[in-house]
Image (cartoon, rainbow, N blue to C red):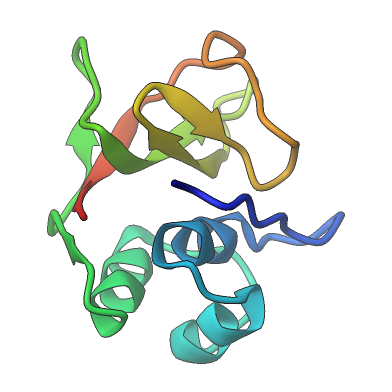
Length: 116
């Protein structure tokens, strides 16, 4: 079961918070593993997940119809110029910037599959 982890307001720590949710460690621990506290790239998420012993896909996969049971997904913002990381767990969206958002709020474009 996912325990929500929230990114500080105004921060770019959504990827860090998603890793913390999946792994079940404090946000500060993930920041230390990633080595910075600004936006994350896919390869940084993969590296951090693997550092904590999590098996995951090597790269993002495009969302076609269904998502795996557990993944970190890329949610494009409304302007399409940037994105936001969220955790999807059995169809429930855990947004590190909000308590729990409706899966229909914003479509997801791609995801990192996680085996747990």
